[in-house]
Length: 168
Image (tube, rainbow, N blue to C red; front, side, top):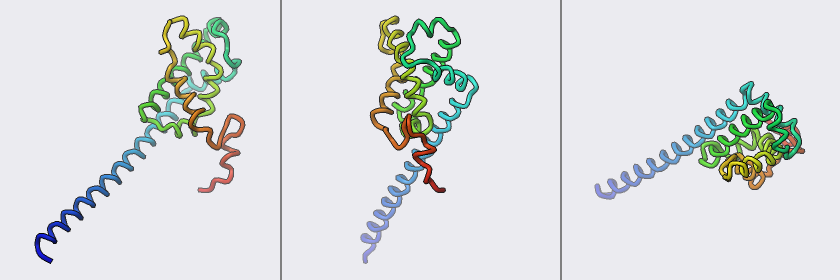
């Protein structure tokens, strides 16, 4: 082999090594971002305010009339607190900061239930302010979960049943 061929092989090997290393780093960075996103979801959900608010929202009837929410400041505050957190989470999923699958695994049922409960209030609020921008990312998130991730778990079949054969 002449020196030119050796140089070409060495250059090609360096380029391939660089590409492989770059791909590995991209995969690693993506996993790290997903883990951070999952941590932030958990962090947002583990506050006393979230837990109190979500318990109130879950106790509401489906499509609770806006007048019923507005008549009780505690219920209204809880619904708005849950809605704002899920609004932010929806946008985070849209921007691919938090993967949709992570949201579904951690709180997919909670998102679906909260939207089902609050849908009437959301529609009322949009009509009242004359804008479809109210609660847009919350609704977007609930619809994407239903559309893309019927998944192993459902509102009727929880993780404790769907994944009972899981082993470490």
